[in-house]
Length: 210
Image (cartoon, rainbow, N blue to C red; front, side, top):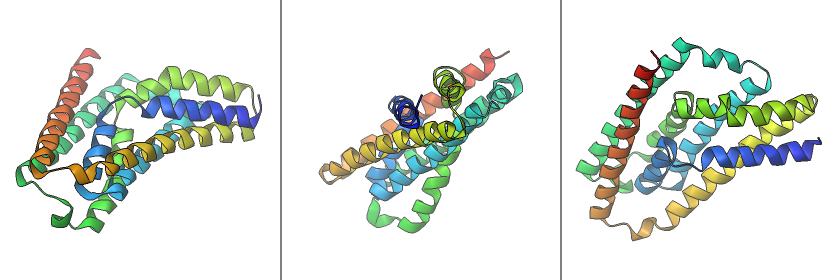
């Protein structure tokens, strides 16, 4: 299998990982609405970095370490706590109805990348993807290729995720001018509820490990 074929496979893997509705996509949309395209896109860039790290672990055969009971339980609980924090921040933003003009934008942008990176690292759903479907696709491709092929498939995954993050950020940003103060508040309340719901689900999954 050639490098181009592996890169295309990686792009499809990246798109399939990025597309489902989850905490990261919710946070990207919320930050775009709150502080503009760059802030939301940086959340996605941070998440891409985390997923690229997991993809690299799969490609190099280190992924079995992620399937340890203690590791999985820690990630479920740590991920739940982080989502509770993001839920609280979203709720507070809705209550205070903070908009772009109210915020220190550069400080928020610096935090956006770190937020996305942590969300990806502490997202057990993403890890389950890499331990199952994504991992199998990457591993099968790597087995048929050399080091250059491994680089191609990892680069493809990053590209696929980048396409999704950029497209989502652009789409949300294009409709941002239609957003009223009341609707902005409702969206933040809904985001808070969804993030908290994912946190509860993470806790349930952690309990189910035992």
